[in-house]
Length: 154
Image 1 (cartoon, rainbow, N blue to C red):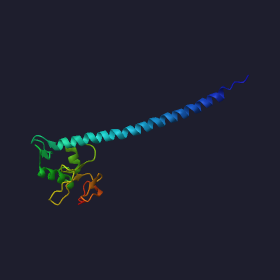
Image 2 (cartoon, rainbow, N blue to C red):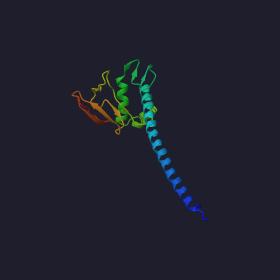
Image 3 (cartoon, rainbow, N blue to C red):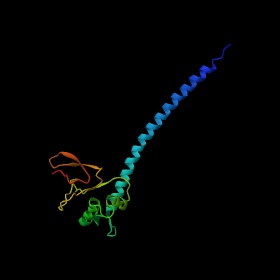
Image 4 (spheres, helix red, strand yellow):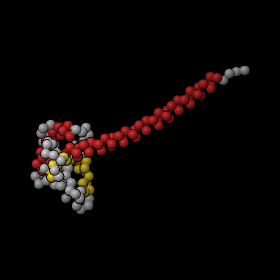
C-alpha cells in the first residue's frame, strides 16, 4: 500500500499560501480605508482648533482676529502679512502659533458665505499655496485658486 502523504502536504501548503494572500489583501484594503477617515477626522479637529484660536471672547489672545464678536481687521492683516511676506516665522510660524500640523487656508466670509475682499490691495485669504479653494463668482461660476492667490472672481 502506497502512501500519498507527500502530495497531500503540498496541496495543503498551496492552499495555506493562497488563504494567507487573501487575508493579507483584505487587511491592507481595510487599513488603507481607515487611514483616510483618520486624516479627515484630524483635519476636522485642526479646523476647530484654528477657528477657536482665531475667535476668542477675551482681549488677551495674540492670534485672535475676532474679539468680543468684532473683527479686528488690523490683526487679520498682520496675521496675513506674516504669511505672505514671511514675517515672524511666516507660514510655519503661524502654523505653530495656531498649534496645527496640516496645511491651512484662512479667509473671511460674510453671513451669506461670500468672500470678504479687503480694500488694501492684497489677498483676503492666505495660507499654503498647495491648498486649493473653490470660489463662486457672483455670476454663478466657480473656479479653483491657490490659497495665497490674489485671483478672486468678481
